[in-house]
Image (cartoon, rainbow, N blue to C red; front, top):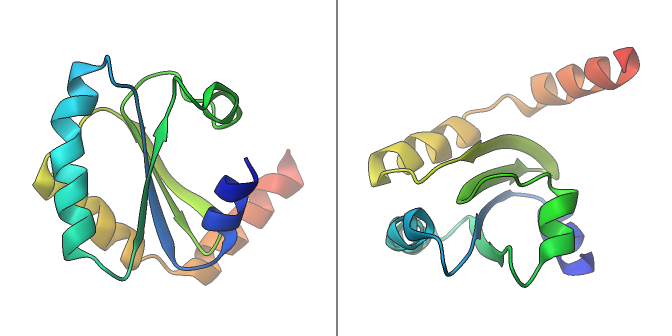
Length: 115
């Protein structure tokens, strides 16, 4: 859990693939995720085995796998279950890169204020 927090709060963009070995969609998404990690060397890519890391998966509210989560500057900016195609993953990466983080922080603060 400490490694998770250190990784996602270190800054930059972090993509995490929550998966399990017994999951066919997880196995089909893995090569897509690995190929993206080789193309986008400025991003941090990580995988979380939900069987081995059940507490972390529960803390992240993972209810379906595979689930892709994207963090930018320590904030969760994307979370979606399902295996993505290479094109879809590239679209997610470009969308996360293009975020106005000042606006994201304002929206997060406003959301917390009303909660």
